[in-house]
Length: 338
Image (cartoon, rainbow, N blue to C red; front, side, top):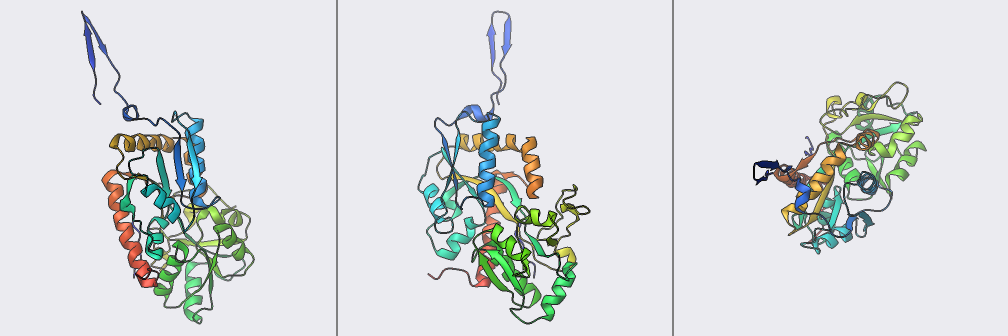
């Protein structure tokens, strides 16, 4: 079974014989914030969403892309429900945006909190974050097939998978692996990707599905080994991370016979009821950010899938992603009882 998350007008003034052509107005000229923009992160400090929000805050200020500052505010309570509910309740406020990850779907499904992404206004998908199957470099598993054969040949629960949190992305992937391999992992939850990485380095667990940015330092040091990436195509980064391997050298899990795919949204939403001119303003800013050399370096460091979407394409993707998460979480028994 394949588990996929897949993702102006020109004015002319005539004065006598003189014709003066005015430059086209940019989309951002139609609306601009009149006070600081609150940039909500529905997760704790130091995680992937927080890192991205603070990166965006910094480059927007550095390059004067907004006359008003972006102020990052972490609201992680209830697996992000605190942040989502705040933005839901700020209907019509164009001075508030939120960065989302898969808890946009998993939190309401797992907790029953009265929130759905349709309570917000989609602005833009900035990227998709990858998940990689990692093992300790001293383990006997040189390839995905080595690992698959070992799991299939072992007893249920023999292999320990470390992950961030419960009923969230890492555990969803682990349950998908359970189904694909016909054997159950023992899932061991930790507070964050950093803790998860240390557990693998210390050989306290057999594997992780950490994001690239969470494990790359340990890969560079030779402590861990990436086996495959849970995406439909390899990561497009040819620069060497280790002496002989790049992100591009990591094969897809599906190409190695492990039919599981999963990527995580890094996207921007606003409250419902905001004017389209405000949405266009933020879309314009994020398009400019994507052209900066800092963004290109940040994306490569994090090995992002840099897919960008706005408008109907983005809304359609989010709709499909919600359905996928609902199916995966139902299969895993993670849906909150009503």
